[in-house]
Amino acid sequence: MGNILQKSKQNHRGSLQRKHTNSGKQLQILQEYLAGCSEDKSKIIFEEGHQTILKVCKQYEIDVYECIFNTDAFPPHIFDDTWRVYYKGLRKFVPHYFGYEPNPTIQDKFNVRLQNLLDIRKDLSKGLLIDNQPVQIKPVSYLDLKIGTKCVLKSLDSPDYEEFKYLDDSTTTITYGFRVTGYCIFENCQVKDYLCEDFSQTRTYDQVKQAFTKILTSQSGQIAPRILIERLILRIQELEQFLRQYSRAVILGSSLFFTFARDYYDEYELYDSQLKIVDVNLIDMCHMELMEKTEDKDWGFIKGLEETIKLLKDIISEKYDKTAEKQIQFKHGV
Ligand SMILES: Nc1ncnc2c1ncn2[C@@H]1O[C@H](COP(=O)(O)OP(=O)(O)O)[C@@H](O)[C@H]1O
Ligand SMILES: [Mg+2]
Image 1: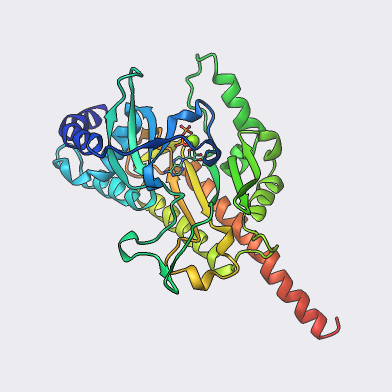
Image 2: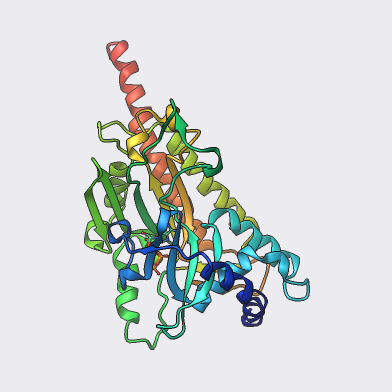
């Protein structure tokens, strides 16, 4: 794979680099929009208009995006069909990739330019008119859920190994294949609840479920419409089924990045055609371990997706089915 990644660099660097540096957009670091971020928060920068972000990353991550978005550029002797299907299939689950540029101030690091997932407009070209008024998009709440039953990216001899292993051992990672690394809930355009890498607050399944429940609840205290939660489930199921069938690598350290426009839950039908009121994407493609055999599958990641689906279904059943049950019991005087 080293070779494949190397080739991708040679093939695409020139054009993408020009495309990016010609954009001339202003940059902004919006720290309140970052949750699951362990190191330097200035490594994510929002570009003017907030439709794209720049992430300072290693060459590795760029190579992964190159493979996913330029799959067809690789001749069959580099990518056989199984790889092509895998990378192409991942494309619909990750933020759109616009290219990269070397960052001259940090050695070995680059800026990758990606779609800003907090920009929830559905189709910019159609404009955003409701009753002839543009929708004022309120801040979008979000949650970063690191997926996989093993998230240690350090080698055994690294001084940080133990610390990373401890996070796996002491959180929901090993048992459920997910852990919350951060979230941010906005209310009245202000940060109402914010958490970043404080695992004491999301160590158990119930704490994770509580975080999801909070973010799925509108300002008025109503849980998000069932259909919206089901949409999240469907998308995760689609990713899960895809990986069950076409995995070619173990995805390590990546997250499901959920976005929730809580201000629109109550009147979702009005806004649904124009805004992605809830959404989930795969971010942080920082490490992939390639599989030798096509029959191998990314089981740790698949487990995390299954458990996430189960958790969301649990919330639906608690908030909807149980309420319906109670109403029926009440009607019948039980
Ligand atoms: N495409 C994106 N759109 C919006 N926010 C993003 C996007 N990518 C990353 N972020 C924000 O930045 C945080 C860190 O990004 P991530 O790619 O996970 O980097 P790392 O974990 O390597 O620091 C995410 O948890 C999220 O809050
Ligand atoms: Mg991350």
